[in-house]
Every structure is written in structure tokens, then in C-alpha cells.
Image (tube, rainbow, N blue to C red; front, side):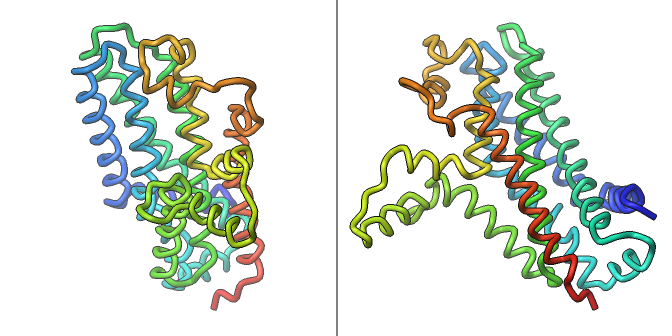
Length: 285
């Protein structure tokens, strides 16, 4: 028994679940609907990816919740984890196997939805379909999904109760997404930063605010999609794309694409490592 066994067993059990079918069907359905709707207004199929990206950052993490929150906490509450770890498996192999199996399912959903969008693009859009743009979009989205799955599985690793895992994962979604980017009414990360600065009689520079905003994996994902629109930004063909990705003057480090990809990777790695450090010594009985 090893990582491969944990991965195979968990993947086999997961793919039989209606949750998995729901995740793939929901994601593919919404992405197809968005791509179909945008065809009425634009000739280039890749323009639909701009709208799809906002669905991915805002809704897809919520779709990941039922796939991830029970990954470890469910086994701990049911007691089945004792059997798994009673075999010659280390706790590290167990956590890694769980993460990789759930990520594989999530990546499968991403590939299915992007493929559906590509096929709709080939059939409904007047302009030529740039497959490379779709492939780039799928790769960057895959990194984002792998990062968020790691964060959610890490949360599940920290508790032995299903309810705590669920509320923890949902809380992380709101923290790293709507709250961080300012989508929540009244309160957001920037309002908190401003309030704290005012209490101490300090001011926060635009550069500092930029660093803070860029530190979320969600922000990093949206910013990191810039290569998808290479050659389009600033051309005047798609003003909304230009507004979101054009940078005036010299770039800050946090505006570089490599920084965005490193941010997403760091969130996933650190979350899993930190949760494992606690799980390694946790009492499972």
C-alpha cells in the first residue's frame, strides 16, 4: 500500500459519486451556456473565455466544495481513516493521495468544459478559433483549480467533523474570493485595510494595496490569464479586455505573470504543508 493505492481507491470511489457527475455537468453546462450566449455579440470565440473566467473564479470554487470538504474529514468522522492508515500507508501518502485524486476530478471538469466551449466556438463563431488560446486558458485555469483544491483539502485535513470542514471551506471561498476582491457589500479587504490604517493614523500607498490584492490566488488567476489575450490587449477590438489587462507605465513585480502563477502555487503548497504538519501529530481516534 502506498500513495498510488490511496490515490487509486479514492479516485475510484470519487468518480462513482453523483457529486462528481454534478460537478462536471454543472461546470460544462454553465460554460457552454456562456459561450453560446456570447456568440451573438462577438466574432472571436476566445472573447467568450473572458466571461467564462469570471464564472470560474466566482462560482467554480463553490462547485468544488462538495468534492473536497469531506476528502479527509469524512474519513475521520466515519472512522474509516483508521483502516486506511492501519495498512502500510504514511499520513503523508494519505493526504497527498486524497489531494491528487480530487484534483484529477476537478481538472477533468475543467478540460470537459473548455472542450465544450471550443466545440461551440468552432460551430457558432464567425471568426477563426485559436486553439492555442483555449489551451492556454485551460492550463492557467487548471493551476487555479489545483491551488483551490489544495486549500480546501487542507481545510478538510484540519478537522474531524463534517460540519466544521464544510463551514471552513465555504469561509475560505468567501475570504479568498468575494471578500478579497471587494465583491461583498459594505465590507471588503480594502475597507478593512483602510479602517486599520485610519486607526493608526497611517496611509496605505497604491503600491501596497496592489501587493495586498495580488496576494490572493483568485486575483492571481484573473491577472494570470493575460497571455490568453496576447495581441488583443490595447488593439481597440475588445475594450473590456484592455481595461482589465492593460498596464500603464512600468510593471510592478506583482503584475508579472510569473508572480501570479507563483502565488497560486504557493497557496496550494503552503496550505497542504501546514495542514499536514498538524495532521501528522493529530489524534485520529
